[in-house]
Every structure is written in C-alpha cells, then in structure tokens.
Length: 121
Image (cartoon, rainbow, N blue to C red; front, side):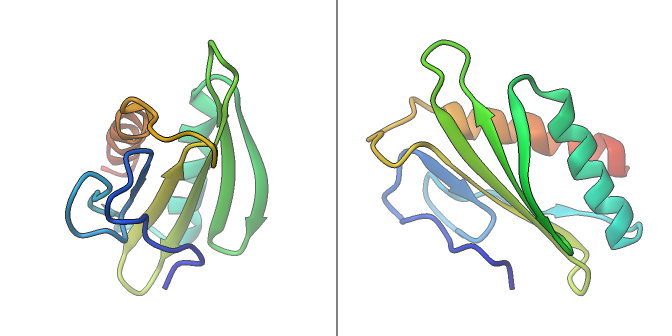
C-alpha cells in the first residue's frame, strides 16, 4: 500500500489513484517492466515538466513538487510503484490553503499519466 492517503472525497484540489469515485479519482498506471524501470520512467516524465523538483526518493517512492507558473504555488505530487500489483499510484495535492485549484491537478495528472503510458507502452 502506498505511503500516502487518498484525497478527501469532497476535495476540489487533490487527485489520487487511491480514490475510487468523485472528482479526486484516477486510475493507477499499469506497467509490465521492472519496478526500477517504472520508477525511472516516473522520474523522466517529471523532469519533462517545467518547475519540478524531486524532494524525496526512497525505494519505490518518489515525492516531487510542481511549482505553478503565474502565482508560484508549490503542489506536492507523490508516486509509489507497486511491484506486486504492477501499477504506479500517485497523489497530487495543491497547497494546503487553497480551496480549489481550478482543475490544475486533474489537468497535470492527465498529462503525466499520458506521458507515463507512452513511456511504459
């Protein structure tokens, strides 16, 4: 199980593969390569986005930050490769004081998911 929790069910600023319904829900990204290759794909995809930084890496876990262009908000995106299930889980959350991110996390994670699926086949 990933090191992060699901988003609150009523959240309008958080998306996660641990949610199964509502705004926050996303499907995990499947992979058929080794867990190490899957994590390398996550790091490569994150590096393709502007204003990103890896702030923690531990085993199959990666915590990153994405800084928004205009207002410079820092959003936290966590990834965990689940070797047993063959999927990559994630949680993307906007700054704690934001009530809504106007869909920024959902849009970002759609792009990240598409890029990961492209790399992982």
